[in-house]
Length: 195
Image (cartoon, rainbow, N blue to C red; front, side):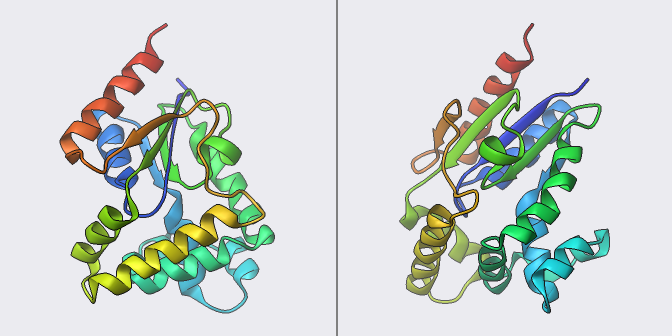
């Protein structure tokens, strides 16, 4: 069975946690596509060469969840040649047998426009910054500045900007527990699986 669930949204909205929970619940494979860009940014050197030579070992680096790796990912994601190098990998993953959940910024709009279920997970910048600050520490005000800067880059890039697919279901997690958000997402996927 081929069945693709696309979750998009800005940083720290909850899409990663929700997508992993969906993959576990339904037995689908999971891909955090942001890790691809984080790994490319973290490798350094020429980003296009790094994207073309990406390995599983690159995706297992322990520093990929840092603020620095996130900022580097946002920068390299603006390079069309980097995006092109990673598109095939993501599309092949999405159509694997057994179902797949992919989370990122352009899954429902560019990578998998024909995904059976599309969810756009969002939350206020302040809530997202607080969540990210709890993960990485530092000064919370600085994290909010970085979240807003990243949103601006991701939403305004020329190639595959962050935006909801026209047929995506909006899931605002600002005032929602992760359990409640996950329950809603599970119900959306169950509806998509019905014949």
